[in-house]
Structures are given as structure tokens and as C-alpha cells.
Amino acid sequence: MDDIALTETEQAHSAAAVGARWLDEKHPGWWEWIDLERLDMCSDSSCIAAQVERELSSPCPPAVLDEHGLYLKFVVNRHDLAFDRRVELGFTSHGIFDAVYYGHLSDAWESIILERRMRYAPVGPTVDECRASQPPERRSGLARWWPWSR
Image (cartoon, rainbow, N blue to C red; front, side, top):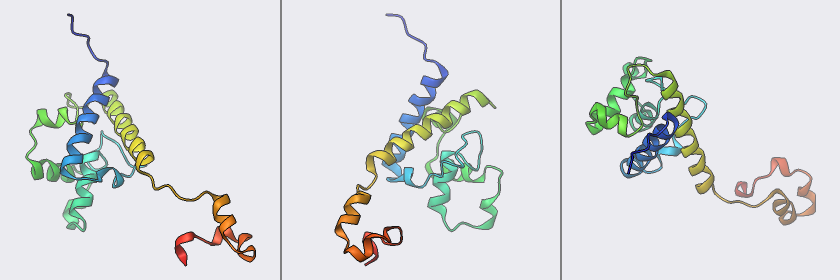
């Protein structure tokens, strides 16, 4: 049977899925720490590894907070990850700088994180259920009331 070549998008999604499973084993709940507004797999300070390391090292020394890839170096050293293993885990690209592939990686990680956030989001009462559970004098001020503030 002929091997079917994966597209770059499929490769990125496959690698990110492997990386997500690896992170699940090493750092459960990692997906809650990721700031999707900052997620950029092309950036040593905003990639998945950097954001996970930032959370694990918090508070970290000022020298670690620069924009020169120190976070990535820390997470790589923490788990002794060789370059090929980082590629397998979807933390980096085979190329020195492959902006297109890094874009696919960013999209892949974002979709994994969003799916997990939706799957594990706490299910709470609807607005109508909150209103119905309140005394009439509080129903009009629902925006200022939260069930857990009592």
C-alpha cells in the first residue's frame, strides 16, 4: 500500500495532538494556562512550551522574562527534549524558520485548547435559571448578582 503524504496542516495537527497527550502526562491541566491571544508557535516567548514553562516557573527570575527564547530553553531542559522530539510533539518546525508551518501549528494548538475548554468547561445555571431562583427584588439586578457571591 502506498504511503499517503500528509499535508502540512495535517502534520501540524498530528504533531500538536501528540504534544497535547505528552503535556497531559507531564503537566495535567496545561491547556488552562495558555493565553490564546498571545499564542504564536513562531515566538520563543509565546509558544506552547514557553507559556507552560512560564506557569511552572512562576514566579520566575527577571532574567527569564525576556523575549529571547529563554522559556523554551527552560522547558526543553526540564524534560531533556531533543530537537527531533520537539518536532514530534509539535513544539517546533523541521525548518529553521518555516512561517507557514508555524501558522499551522498555532492553529492546531488553538483548536486543541478550545476543544478542551469547551469539553471541560463548568456547566452552570442559565441566566433564566438564575433569575428564577432569586427573590423578585433581586431579579432586576441580576448583572450584579452571582450565585457564588452569597
